[in-house]
Structure formats: C-alpha cells, structure tokens
Length: 118
Length: 112
Image (cartoon, rainbow over all chains, first blue to last red; front, side):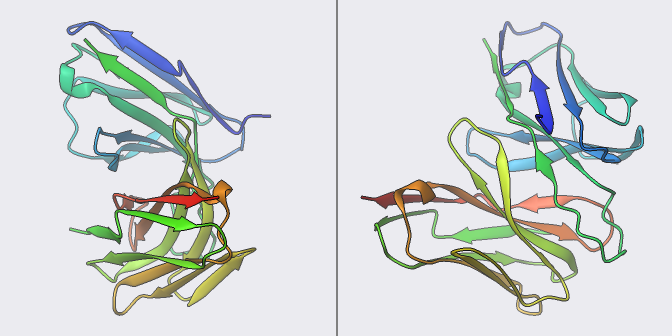
C-alpha cells in the first residue's frame, strides 16, 4: 500500500548517459513534484505537474525533462548526465496545487532515488 | 526570493530533554509552514502543517508554533527519545503557487 513510490532506489551510471527515474502515487492526488537534494542536503524543487500539466519549472537545465503520462505518474528523464547531477531525487504528491482554498496540502514524499554519476 | 534558515544546524541532547528547533523565513507572505522529518537514506515524513492563519499545531510530543509577521516558527519536542534522532526540515509554502521552500535542516541526535 505504498503511497508514493520511486524506481530505481539507486542508480549508478557514467557521464554522458541518458537515464530515467519513475514515480507513481496511488493517493489520487492531482499534483506531483520532483525535488533534488544535493550533497549539502538542501532540498530544492525542480518541477511540478497538476493533472498532467506543467505548473512549476525552476531553473533546471534542459537536459532534465519531466513526463506525466497520467496524473498518477511523473517520470524524470535526464540526458547527457554530468557529475554535478549526482544527488538524491525525491518525488512527491499533494491533493491540489495549494491555492487559497483553506484546504491542507501536505506533500507526501517518495523514498528517493540516489543517482551517482561517475 | 524566499529563504528559509534553520538553527541550530545540529543538536545533540541526552534522552528525556525537552528541545526547541528554530526556523525563520524572509518573506512573510506564506500559505502554510510544514515540519518534516528525514531519516538517513529515507524520504521525508510530514510531522506538522500550520496554516498561515494558525498560531500552533500539536501532535503527541510535538508542538509547532508560527509567528507569520516575524517570519519565525519553532518545533518543540517534549521528553526526547533516541527514536527522535533524525534530520528535521522546515518548509514554507508560498502564498501563490505550490512551491515549498526548504531550510537546510537540523540534525538531531538523542543519546540514550
């Protein structure tokens, strides 16, 4: 009954390769996110999708391309991997985009994918 | 640009102590503030969420307060236990849009 799941948990690859990380949520949420946690443990948002539509796109290299085939899935594809891409990538979901509706919008996080680029 | 700062960066206490973790943010136009817990090699677990109109939230031994006008929040942990050892992250949700901005976290170690 995993709420937010990510695959793979660990990913080790060479510089220049292309890789994908998959995320699925079974909570029925409308909004999904990708975060990056660097070596200093800072968590920063990368992308957010609401009902398959991109609503947040932070300053992230074009090599990163999120894809949402349906609202329960948000995959992250990374082209031409670089050493600096090594980090832990977290997927998250929330019921809605967090507008001023008075509703709580706790974000639920997946277990993370540790990406190591050699 | 919203910035979130957490103090202290690390804290080591003996079991049973009450402790306070601090969080400050630069832009008071927030929708809510959340406290998360992160265990090594694991994802984040939401502990408490305080809406901008609220002053505090409580869950078991945890109490979080929010002073929106001064840009501060505290997480109070009563009667700490070794199982409380983790990294505690504070995050604020902007008034418009759905972006959570995180602090760098406080690494807590409770010694038995």
